[in-house]
Length: 142
Image 1 (spheres, rainbow, N blue to C red):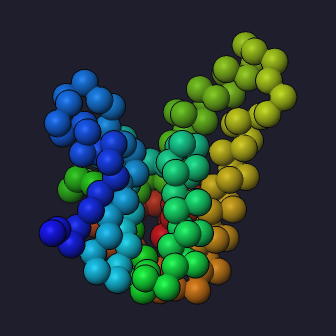
Image 2 (cartoon, rainbow, N blue to C red; image 1 turned 180 degrees about the vertical axis):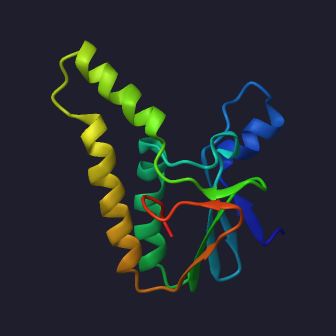
Image 3 (cartoon, one colour; image 1 turned 135 degrees about the vertical axis):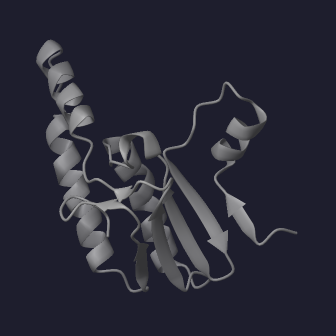
């Protein structure tokens, strides 16, 4: 039995090459829980889907007695996290201009990102960021 598990979608991507990669990998190693930001081609910049992936998992880990420490790191060798993915925010804003949407996703990005940052700052568990390479001083989950 392996002590390391990862997100099922990532495992599927390895077995079935057409499956899209997961942008945040979840791992469990004994009492630790880990996020791996998995967009090395974009210097692990955060987008709205990554934030929405991490927030509920972080809440669950914080409430779990099995989780003793939460770790985050970036995939690849170039960056931990370059901050918010500005390109994706601009794309969301352009979509909103083209379509009349009730939910302003471009603004939601910043709202949900700051909620994630607040959640991290108020965790009951130790939170360790493994910083390697480019690391933004704002807009990153560290």
